[in-house]
Length: 222
Length: 291
Image (cartoon, rainbow over all chains, first blue to last red; front, side, top):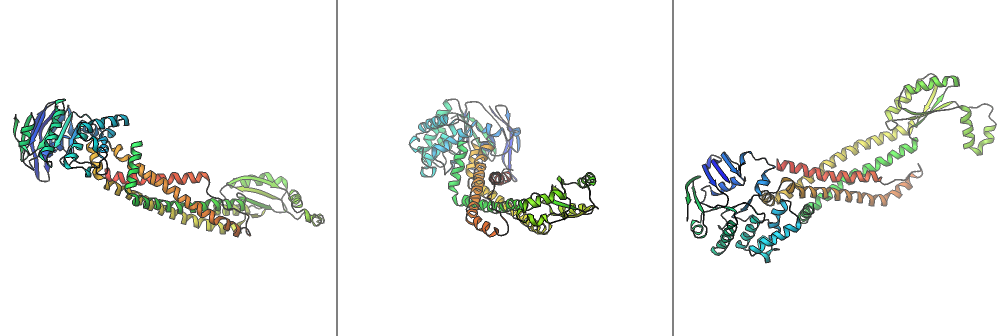
C-alpha cells in the first residue's frame, strides 16, 4: 500500500532523511519512534506531501508521489486523516466547523456533513462541545477534535505526528484508544512519537525506530 | 456556493474596518468616474441639441442653377463623412421663412426679389470631432459654386475644446482612480489572505482544492466591488438631486436644457465595472500569492 524506496530529504545542507526504504501494508499499525529531530515528522510530511521528496520514490496504492500533479494532490490528501501535535484547528471556527471542513472540501452535501460530524463528535465524546471555539477547549479536548477531523472523511490512512506530545497521560491514552478502534476497522495508522513507553503499552503493531534520518530498527513487535 | 458565501461574509465581519475602507475607496473612485460620465452624457446632448446632430448649411452662389445640383452633390459626397444631404431652393427657403415669421409677412410681401440663396443642408457623420468638421467645411467651401458654409463654428469650436479637455482630464482621472481602487482591493485581499494563512494551510492539508480555498476571497472581492459601485452611484444620485435643478435654472437663460441622470445602460455598466474591479483586484492578489 505504501512503498518508500531510498527516500532522502535535504534541508539546506543537512540530510533529514537518508535512504529510507519501507513497505507498509493495508491495515497495519505502525509506530515510528526516535528522538526529537530524528526525521519522524519529515517522514510523515513526505507522505502527505507537505514536504517534497528530494531523492527516491514514494508509492501510495501505486501512485508515484514524485509525479503527482497539483490537481491530484487534494484527492490524495483526502485519503489521509492527519493529526498534528499542535492540533492545527482554525481558531475562528467551532469544533463542529473544524471537523465539517474536511467534508465541505470533499464537496459533500450539507445533510450528510451534519450527520457525519455529529457521529464523530459523539464517538470522541465531544458532542456537547460542538459549538465551542478551539481556544476555549483544553489541550486534550482540542486533540480529540483534531482526531475527529482526521477520521470524519473515512480515510484509509491516518497519519499522527506526536498526537499525545502535549497531553496528560489520561488524554493521551484516550486518543490512542480511539485510534486503535479505527485500526480495528481496517484503517492503516502511522504514529510518530518519541514516547516509546506509552506506545508499547498501548498499541499492537510494528515499531520503526529512526535516528539521524536513518531507520535503525524495523519490525519490533511489542 | 452557500458555503463560500457564508465564509466570505464571516471574513467581512471579522475584518469590518478593512472591508469598509475598501468599499469606500471603490465608491469614491466610482463617484469620480460617474461624475465624468454624467458630464460626458449631458455635454454630448448639449452638442447634439445645439448642432442638431451635425447639421450644416451650404449656401450656394447666385450663378447656381438646378442643372448643377447632381454634379455638386456627387462632388460633396466624394469628400466623405456625409450622412444626409437635402437641397433647399431659394423659393422653398423663402416660403419656410414666411411660415416661420408669420408676423412679418407684410414686410416679406414687399420684397421684389428673393434675397435668399439656394442651399444644401447636410448632416455630418463624425460631427463630435471638431477638426474633422472643420476640414470638411473647408473642403466644401473650396468648391467654386459654394458661397459659404455655416455649422455653428463660433461656439462649437470653443465648446468642443472644453469638452475635449474634460475628456482627457476625465480619462486620466478615471485611470488613476481605477488603479487606486484596484491596488486597495488587491491589498485588502492580500491582508485577508495573510490573516487566514493558517486556515488556508489547514484547508490544503485536509484536501481542499485551490478553487475551494480561493472562492470565498473572490466572493469577498466581488461583493466589495459591487457595494462600492452602488455606494458611489448613490452618492452621485444624492448630489445630482441636490444640484441639478439649480444648474438647469442658471443655464436656462442661455439654452433650454435639463441635466439628466445617467442612463440605465451606463448605471449597469458602472456597477458591472466596479464588480469586475473587485474581482480583478482579487485575481491579481491571489495569482501572486499562489504562484
